[in-house]
Every structure is written in structure tokens, then in C-alpha cells.
Image (cartoon, rainbow, N blue to C red):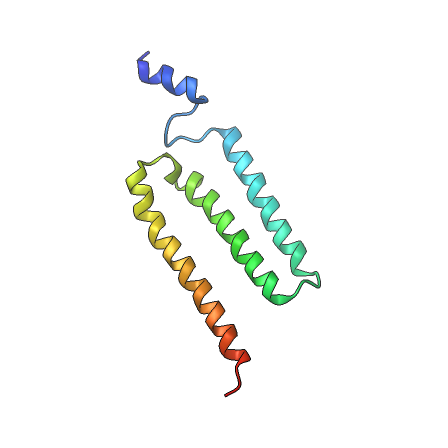
Length: 110
């Protein structure tokens, strides 16, 4: 066996880019828990503004797990991660700006 195999075994037993069954199930249960939480809070009397931002944050959490583990971005080189994540961060920022400005416009008299 090569030295690379021993380094991978010391890291936790899985090769970069390869998911173990245990890790897949752990990510599945996390995603299921977040989704059930989203469905549960949808039927509460939480104000719509707070609910909207909560859904946005929870969707970002779910996208982290999907992109990081199932699309294997977590195991890529750091510059490549930033190439993918920076536009995503900017889009999320623009969504927050649009939501804020949209709510400010709806409250101002015309």
C-alpha cells in the first residue's frame, strides 16, 4: 500500500472525493431534519418577514451540505472552492438587498 493510502486512513477512512456510507447517511439525516424543521415552522404564527429570512438561511444551510458533500466541493482545492462560492455569496447578498429595498418601497407612500 502506498503512503497516500495510510494518510487517507488516518484522516478518517475516506478518500478525497469518495463518500462513505456513514457520511452519506449523516448528511441525509441533517438535510431531512432541516427540511422537517422548515415544514414545521411554515405552519406557525411567526411573522412573514422573520419566516422569509429563516427560510433563506435554512436553504443556504441545505445547499452547503448538498454542494459540499454530494457535489464533492468540500474535497476540492481552495481556489476552486472560492471560484464557485464567491458568485454564490454575491447572489445571496443581492437577494437580501432586493428583499430589503422591496420592503422599503412597499412601506413608503407614493
